[in-house]
Image 1 (cartoon, rainbow, N blue to C red):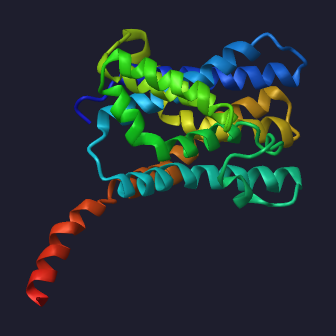
Image 2: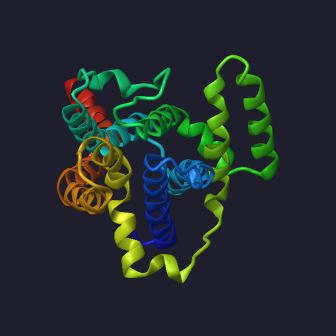
Length: 251
């Protein structure tokens, strides 16, 4: 993609490593990184809205299907592996929507469910992101009211802010180095696979952490590569002219 911001890719990779480091610390009883890791997840939400707002060209139904095809396969593989390693009852499909409590088998899944729910509001995020700052403020204030009925509306703030920040193109050379870009490429699988490996593999951290990076790299060149290609191939809007022509001919 010609206008891709590689700094965001590098930042995404660094934040995924930060979340992993937090979970390593938590396994050792250390809470030092819990706040930075929470901020990292908020940043993931903002970057998601930022990138998707820049790329938005309409085609809402196709967009939703593309996001499902893009995100679900890696999630399904990692959650299946988590259930297999933990021995917990396999209720993979239960976590397709926002869980009422944290899925203990793979804790990072909760943020993916927020992401999935937010995708249904993408036209709103684009409307706000491509509008004035006053529109952003009004949307944020509106969520304050919605929160009384739907507490999860709080997370909309991050998507709204990220969408509005899509107009800027901030770059940092350090985040565009080869290593940072590699971390960015494996960030999504790493985010979803590291917790089950650290928690249920039975390996010491000196082995489970490198294993998490290895599994993430493998998923990147297999499952994720397929999901990216499949999602890019979905073009619902391209069916409209053909359908219209067929209707005219049949008429």
